[in-house]
Image 1: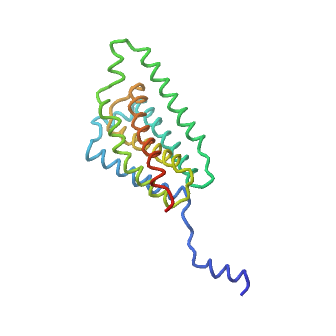
Image 2: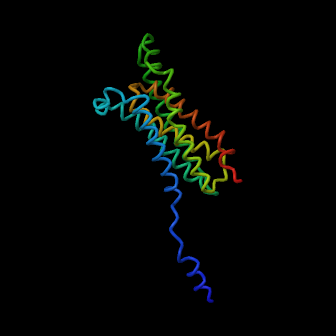
Length: 212
């Protein structure tokens, strides 16, 4: 049998395999839906959700967390391959956080001393970060499961990227419940929730993603 015939015989029943992006998009969609269901049936949507959509700060907050999610997804997609170098994505996420943190600092500086605590703490500082972590847990778990079918070699960095993505997506969905709009609040408590998930991913990565 000629080489060309052998190759044709071996490949005739092969089906196209999903790309790395497609494999990671599935847990993103599934995890996002789980987070949305948890908001709907556990936390509840904010009562003024329809009016909130007209408020610029609603979209500023969503843009911040959404950009963090995109940066995390990009890092995860790159690290899913053995030669991936994701550092630009991590640096981008830090730059995004820096802009929001600077805005929050300016906001506090322009606020009277009497009102700063209320601006920073809002009415839900004690539950904000932990709710984001709870919403992001399923997203992180599903993303790590998807990564096990790929070929990451930098396991801690890959786990951190997955956690960053899970945190950004969970925080974006959480915004449908949370009425807090102050940049100072978002920079501290939203970022803390996303940071915890990033750290959790970094800790779980070497264990969850190692080849067995």
